[in-house]
Every structure is written in C-alpha cells, then in structure tokens.
Length: 236
Image 1 (tube, one colour):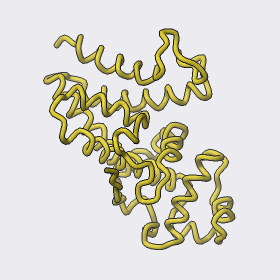
Image 2: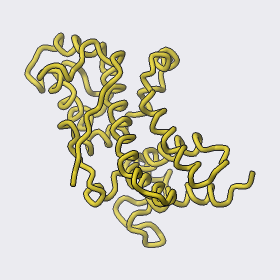
Image 3: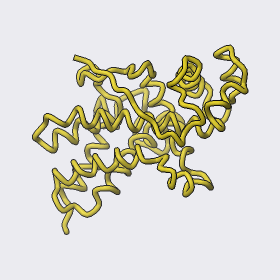
C-alpha cells in the first residue's frame, strides 16, 4: 500500500506560505519542473512567471529570491526523505537491513518495491531528486550560510543525517564518526551521480554500461562498500 507525506516547512523560507494558495502551489511545483529542466543559474522568476501565466511580482510575494526557492525545495526533499527513512525502517529489527534500505532511498532505487510514492503532495519526486543532485550544494555554499543556519533553514538535512547516524550506531555501537559517515554517504551518493552524468573521468561508473565487475547497480554497490567496509573494519 502506498502512502503520501505532507511536509511542514520552516516559515523563514518564504514570505507567504506557498501551500496557502493555488498560485503558491503552482509556483513551487512548476518551479521544480523549470529548475530541473534548465538549472538554477538559468532559471529566473520572469521565466517561471511566464510558465505559469502570472506576473513576476506575484512570485516575489512568496519568495524573496530564487535562492530562497532553491533552499525551500531542497529542504522539502530532505524532510520527505527523512520520513521515508523512518517509515521504511520502523518495523525492521536488523540494523544492516535498515542501512540497505537507506542506500536505496538515497538513490531512489526500487521505490515501487518499497511502496514509496513518487508523487507526495503533488510534488514530482524524481524531478526534485534531480535538483538535489545538480543544485543542492548551492543551497548552503554561500557567504550567508551562517545566518541561514541560525534560522534553521538546514534543519531537515541535519535531521536526516542524525536519523541515519542513529541507525549506523545501532549497527556499530560506539562508532565515533556516525554523523560524518551519514553526511558523507548522502553527499557521495549525489556527487557520484552528478559525476556520472557530467564528469565521468571523476568516477568509475559508466551510466551507459555496467561497471568492470558486471554490476547492474554499481553506484549502489559502491555506497554499500563505502559504508560497511568502514563500519565492519573500524577499530576504536
């Protein structure tokens, strides 16, 4: 049975809650499509306004600028993903199996088998995932990151890392780098996916074929190796 998730967002991310009106919802959902299609740099509120047949000024009533919209979208995705981690692992007793589920969720692998809907709150999850791979680091690699952090704009990402770190500690009690391993696992999943698409010489994975050992899901295998080789061999 599939289920959907309703995500509640930090009020500091917007000037007016986009979920409070039909226009606001269109801004977010069509903003996802436009950003996924042309990228953060090329996207403008003028282009978005033309896409949804409204005035550019109307969009500024909801979001201060396009960077704030990006942070909103990325934060929404992290919160959705944390809910998936919670739901997918809540009834499991084997901590290794929990971690295996998490790896698949990070890559959006086998979602139908996991009964995870790709349309939560009418949001296009695959398109959001693409934005996270391409653009997520731009949400916090700014000169005002400290101020944004004080406003807890990155709390959904921290919460996700904390939840994954907790499961890592279930698997390997006392492991001293659980948060670092959790955040590096998430970042590696997305950076390697980006490299596969755009900078293939920085990765061992050819998106057009299997990897040298014939693995059909080489990135998943790599993440599994990265995670369990460090946990199973750690000495402290």
